[in-house]
Length: 272
Image 1 (tube, rainbow, N blue to C red):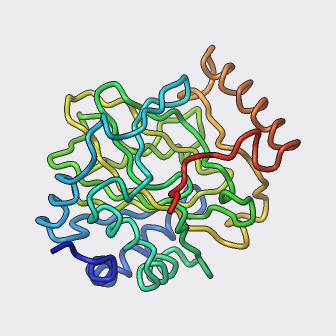
Image 2 (image 1 turned 135 degrees about the vertical axis):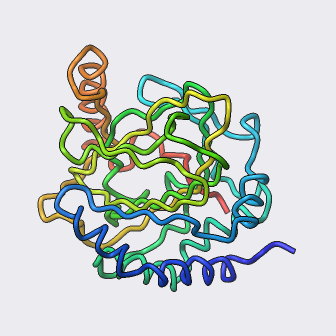
Image 3 (image 1 turned 180 degrees about the vertical axis):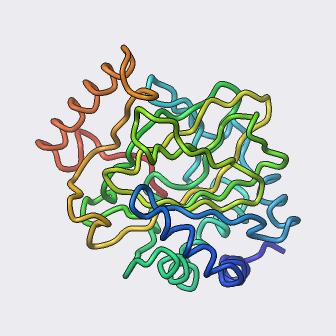
């Protein structure tokens, strides 16, 4: 019997509540740079393993490969095991959204049932995600993206495996803070115009598996936030790749000034 999203949400909420004050402190102390917190052993181990074991194969996912990123994604959830859809939407249940919002001192966070740029992420050897800012808005450009929730489910994941979350909280010319994509770990980070982050290159033959959600709001996290497309940069800035990425950012931004939804609508959403 597959656990329902409500049942899973109760487990998530219980764990968050048990460490709520420590998590609030984590986020508050990092809020002036890139606000974040992470919590280990989020769900019972056997449930996390079951989620991992039912992840789609690489051949069943969509490859994203260009000079910005190299990874696999899956978001049309009715193609995959029912548990995967339930765990994604467990993070969108009211009790979980409310708790995460309280931890991050955010009012009226809104989940995204369309999974715009969310869903499942898989990364194999040599996969990476360049330093970037997430798109500032939802698919209709009505709401501001404010939180990124990343739940890692690949067993025995270590720092040496690569494929870890990097927060460039001291700017692009300094070393980032690394958060290991550890089994059964939930990482939550603020998304605004200063929240540069990346995933370093996977160095192992294992597959890094992540359940991804975003929360939105009618108002941005920072008063100075402005609309921007997903914006990429080279590591530590500088170099030919960084120049190419800045040109690419400028080109895509110009298109969005003319076409609010882009030349074509982003297909990365759950078509129910």
